[in-house]
Image 1 (cartoon, rainbow, N blue to C red):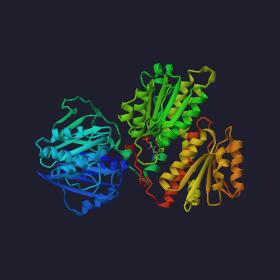
Image 2 (spheres, protein in one colour):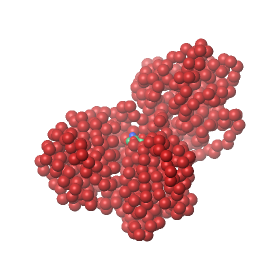
Image 3 (tube, rainbow, N blue to C red):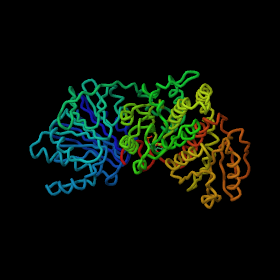
Image 4 (cartoon, rainbow, N blue to C red):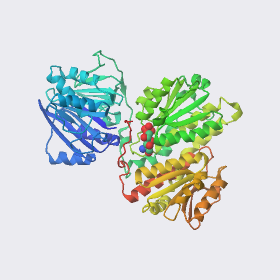
Length: 610
Ligand code: M6R
């Protein structure tokens, strides 16, 4: 889950590496570092624990650093704490420097072997075994590239590597197995990085490497081979990513920016996918209609916030007669799946690089699931490339670790899927024109809901000194309560749990007292009367309630009960609209608590380790 970048250029690569690291920091921010070849045979390596700002301070304290070849890294610690010693790049023999994103699973065995060969380790990381292996093979007579190939053959695990040799300025070698890696092609320059956004200020021309690729990058020439040395052809692509879409602009945090972009993100996700009366099946892929015709069941697999989107979709799909199961990706692989026939696997992922989801998709294929559809926000991600059908959410880059606009656009995609699936079953009588109208009105309802910010800001004060919070809802809004609790936990560090309100009396009611804020999602749906009773049960026990309701819920504020009215919308899309106030609540609680909202402790945006 780290970010890597490398550059060869005819000008100083230091600013390029630092700018790239800034854009990659979402992948991990426990430490960062770089190694630049400043003259043949000589590196300058600087590393610093903590966020990138610490590395920038170290750079400023070290004066002028100038070189045309370099690699850099931002770390999410797996093996060894986030110290300077464990920060990448790792160096061996004073001439090979290496950065890695991923995990070497057999590192203990390799470390013992290397120690037996007389190698001394400087860090506790698994990565250091790779650089030492390469150096050892070179000492034993292999050239740089052959030493890398031979070393990789002995590694188990998933990783992406960037490697430079101080004796060969103007050259970087990259390798991909499991973790993402792209090559950027510039004017008199070439690059390597974990994603396109890292290089968007330098170039728009990219090659996406595939698993098993080894790339030999020189300023004028790029050659891709496999482990056996066979030359491979990979297409060059042009990215239309707007560099400004990854700039913060006048917002305080990316999360705030992304919350307020949600109306536009929904419009962009709908654009070109619907007419006034029909969802275009082709938006899921050319073969979608043929595959959907055969589909009898749906299995959704995802993690975290994406999993919550899947839970909402189950209500929608079952409502139109499509059996649907939803499972956390990291658990899906531990069960047998005896009846995968005519079952469409739908994976949901913002990044498309979540290793648990990728592994679960592979496992589903092994189990014989018929077809796969990825709903994803990152083009050319591993998930997109490994899936038969693809629906791209057009949320734009999501930088804040807490997922917001990706979730809302996943829900839009899943609603479109539901509408298409409903055609299979005329008994369920979903009116397609009406459903499309509801979706078209969604951006306006989101904008109206964002206007609740000042009221939510006030309510957030009540959470500032609290350790715990409960979230309650029923039915299709229960996953929204789960999502609200996850947002609060992840960015404000308040322990929050969501319960299906009917479960309250089976245990969690014991937790309720005046110190436990209870948030409830209460639209005027079929469950509202039962939910109102649960709200009263909490009040009767001294609990303090914050209820997000619509104007038809007929609930008003009184002692220990604050009601915030959200715009009334059709019940099908109300889970999307009720998500917004919970995001704002989490954001404002975190703001008051002064946490690092975009980079909460211990987390990373893209989780590429199991
Ligand atoms: O990129 P993905 O959607 O696959 O990521 C899945 C989760 O890691 C992600 O949703 C995570 O739970 C978010 N930080 C939640 O805000």
